[in-house]
Length: 96
Image (cartoon, rainbow, N blue to C red; front, top):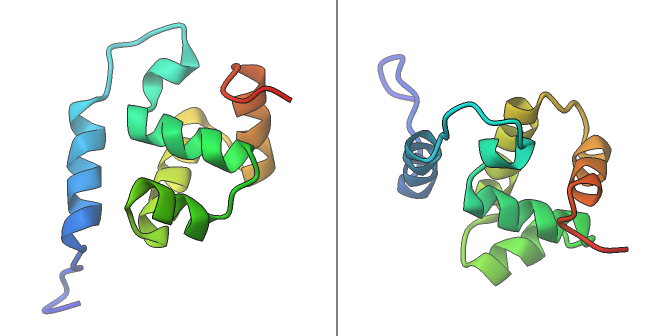
C-alpha cells in the first residue's frame, strides 16, 4: 500500500477487468453469471485439484485461482468451498 492506496498485481487487475467485461445480462442460468475462466477453475476445483495444481495447469498464480474462487462465491451467493463444489456438480460441470 502506498499513500492509502492498494496495489494489485497486473494479473489480478487483468482478471478483474475481464470479469467486469464478461458480466452478462440477467439470465436464469446461474452459470451465465460467471466467466469462462471462472468456469474452468470451478470445474478443476470440483474435480478435487488444489489451487497450486490449477494454477500450473491454467498458467496463472495460485492467488489468482483463489481470487476466481472468491469472486464466484460472491457472484453466486455461496458461502463455502463445499457449497461451490455442490453447485458445480448440480450444474453438470463435473461428472461423478
